[in-house]
Length: 266
Ligand SMILES: Cc1cc2nc3c(=O)[nH]c(=O)nc-3n(C[C@H](O)[C@H](O)[C@H](O)COP(=O)(O)OP(=O)(O)OC[C@H]3O[C@@H](n4cnc5c(N)ncnc54)[C@H](O)[C@@H]3O)c2cc1C
View 1: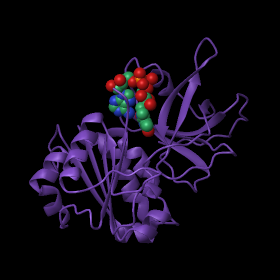
View 2: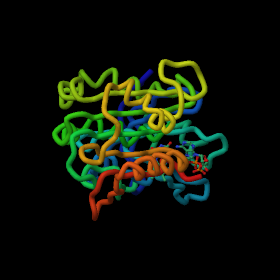
View 3: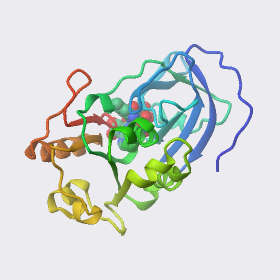
């Protein structure tokens, strides 16, 4: 349940105040913090966030901003790594606590790194849905594409909850609700439990089951653009499938057909 309390004034450099915390499972949570006045970012980018260590030095990690670029607060979606240097402590934050947010956004999961197209595919595993949580709430995405397809693969059904909740509520969004209701297609899959869609997204792409389920043509660089955010293995496997089909990898300086970013290192 989301709890709202009065906001304390930040006192540390780059410190922002936690305004909401929501625990989705034993291993996943999301939170919102106040937005630094100097922070301008493109939906899909990441920043360094963290906490002070006992020795007073900052412990920072890369985090995708899960809220869209127009939002007044910043949302993050986080794993809880047992014994993880940052997340073993970050998972205990409460409303009113302070989190360091370095206001220097970067990243390749941005519409600027893709050539114009008709369909945008956003392929995520685990916390890799975070940048797409930002993009799916950005009006620019619906202005650029006729269809936006989000696939999210997790081990268990409960790990889909953050994404499922966003998709369930997006029709009520005052900025993108109408367009999202028409253009956004959501394809959740689960690898380790019974579910309506089962299996790794790469297997479902190779077998064609993904396209059958969505009622779409297979991926085609003539009109499809793809963003990938997951484990190293997922990124490498989807990239191979795309390159076999003639897709070229893009970047901020040389936009092309697909872009990818690691959801974590390791
Ligand atoms: C570009 C980029 C964006 C990122 N965005 C996010 C984000 O939005 N949300 C988020 O939770 N993490 C994100 N991460 C990972 C994040 O930077 C940290 O690794 C994570 O918060 C754990 O920190 P830690 O200090 O507790 O453990 P670490 O020492 O950083 O990690 C310990 C081990 O935990 C595993 N691990 C770390 N992060 C994840 C993860 N997200 N999912 C599954 N396994 C993981 C890895 O095996 C890693 O070796 C991102 C990483 C990169 C490179």
